[in-house]
Image (tube, rainbow, N blue to C red; front, side, top):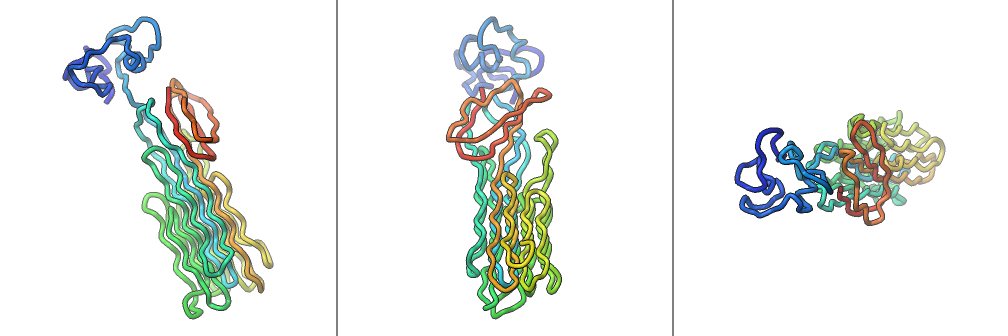
Amino acid sequence: MALNGSGPISLAGSTVGQSIALELGLSATAQISLNDAAVRALAEKPSGAIVMPTDFYGKSTTISIEYLVVAGGAGAGRTANGSGGGGAGGYRTSTLSVNPSTNYTVTIGGGGAGSTSASAAGGNGSASVFASITSTGGGGGGSGSLSSTFAAPNTGGSGGGGTGVGAGGGAGQSGAAGTSGQGNAGGNGDDNVGGGGGGAGAVGSNGTQSSSGGNGGNGSTVSANLGGGTYAGGGGGGTNDNLPTGSGGAGGGGNGGASGDTVGSAGTANTGGGGGGGRAAGANQNGGAGGSGIVKLRYPDTKTISNPGGGLTYSTSTSGGFTVATFTAGTGNVSWS
């Protein structure tokens, strides 16, 4: 907890909220000096005189980080009888209290590959991580062929859409489930059409026989503090028989193949969007790949990221007393000074 905003503050002692030693995680009887590095860091006075107790009012060893953690989106299924769209990567946003001198892991999840086999679903996306926050990769879309070979969709941050063929040639598979608090289920397939992949903000639409593939579920819009924008849309479902394919959900979801025999569109990079299913007018077509994920962190501009190790790719912008760091690739550790 932060030190109190007025009244006495001691270097050591047992009074919670008034003892610098306890705020620094030391014992109530610890011997410390105003010139100790940890004490100066708490007072935000790296050099010069420290005024007791004024320089410590309201100070804390922790800082509050507002975060967005989006995992990689999934690839769509392969189609000759309607493939499912890829599910969006898991979407998580909130605040987390951290110790700025501690190293915290940041990982940007990659998108899953589109399926190249009617007997395999699209590839799941990879998880994105910040500290204790992990967002689950999207679930791959289901695949199907005219010979009744099929693969059911996968669960994930958001679930993949169902394929348009089932066991024994039955009409379609159900969409797969998403992860609670991160995304939604994919839509169901129907004869010749696949369901849309689930998105962070909505379930994928069901494919409709003799009509169209299901649309991907829409993503969610992050707060203006983190720059706004919509992330984690599901991929559109693929079709056979020249039926229209589904559209990708808002937030980077890939559209289904446009016409004839075409591969589905990939999810947009750094949105966690799912890939779109292919369109087949007589041949098998692969699904589109999922889009990579993203991590965004907002923290007081009095702090600077001091250890962006591990090949992390990131940029920063500062406004209104806060800095937003946007991580777009890699994995490594971060801390603040």
